[in-house]
Length: 420
Image 1: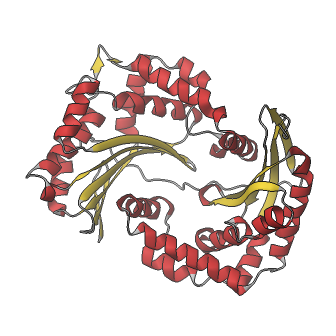
Image 2: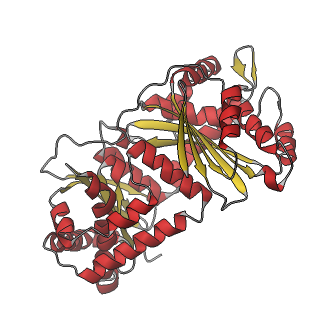
Image 3: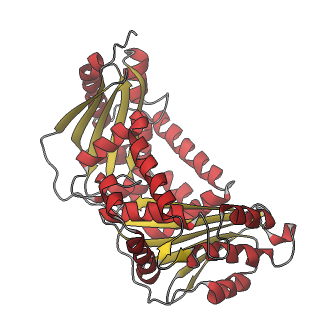
């Protein structure tokens, strides 16, 4: 059962289920994205989780988490289209399996982390440590060649939109942030962000509402949220091509497509079926043609990001085979536009989609995220998704191809001797 409790300062979303022994909470602080936010919020998360005014050392924090039956607390900062969402997440054993009042004690600990940081003289205690941790993350971006290659594609494909940004942050922004500025940024976040609280588990709703009314100390007037979705106003006929050389063996070929004028049904359902048939696994068109029939790649996938209205194809190959890979990929795209796939392909994609939905029901955080997407992206809930996926037809898939526009080809070329 799903219920919304609207407060002037935040939205409380409660999902009732007795399937799990644990309770999970996700507290989101959301605002319209600008580039500088990414680094600020990554740094802020590192510092807030390190200590609080009440638990000023790492050891104090560890002792408290043990006293609360091993509660887990973490922080993520995610880019969701036009918005950045900073999330405080916690999962803990329901007091029905521990002792009375533990739910409230555990929630109080999470709120202690958010609202009572370790600040002295208007400065965060572990500011320097937080900066070092963020710098290490930024420096390690190139260590994962596939992720780096994809990020470079998105920078080019999404130039001028939030799609161009990475989710970790930027060294030039990090260098500029002072301790005092971060404290002010934190205080502004509490006062001005859109706040959503998602909680799932087996509990008395009235008790949960009371706890947050008593303890969630935000008094600002809630603002309406705009659309998360990135729309592409202009579609260029000329495909952008860029190449970068790196000292690795494998070459990474990345092809980005912009989607324009999709309906909600196409975005939620047709797009998934299309990408699954094209490049969603070992039975996909791209895998069979490029890898199995021609032995040109190590791996190939077609992936969609509906919030950003894009599809991208990633290929791991040899640098001498890039042109042939591209030619075969274009041929498969042309076949998709002509309906060169059968009912079995469509049914296999639908079955995989429904099975993935059934898997969601087995994971508490999966259910929570589904309701988050329902609130933020207006996506359908579980039962409705199972029904609507069955309505996707071959004509829908052919029609979708007309809305897919190749925009960017980025090649990260490996210059090492591949035989060695």
